[in-house]
Amino acid sequence: MDVESPGSGIKYCRPNNSRLEVAVAQTIDAWGGDPHATIKAFIVANTLLEQELSDLRCKDFRRSSSSLSVTTSTTRVLRSAPA
Image 1: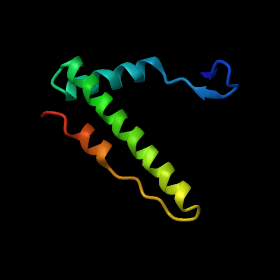
Image 2: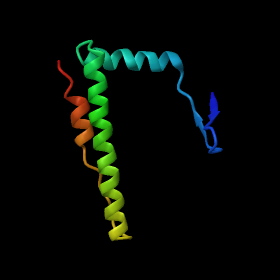
Image 3: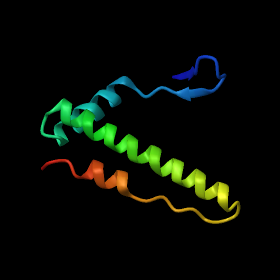
């Protein structure tokens, strides 16, 4: 289902609720069934992504034509879920 973002005129596709619920359940399960730990992991991952984006913007600002690489620190955080 396409949904328009309020005030922006940008349309995006809303994920199927059942797929979203399955993804949520799998993610919580990956963190030992602890929703609190799961949310903490996502906050840490989001913080790392925001920092990487900020760093990339600074690099891009300083040198307008270069290839930029994204680190995998966020992937490492999300993959470090307790077994």
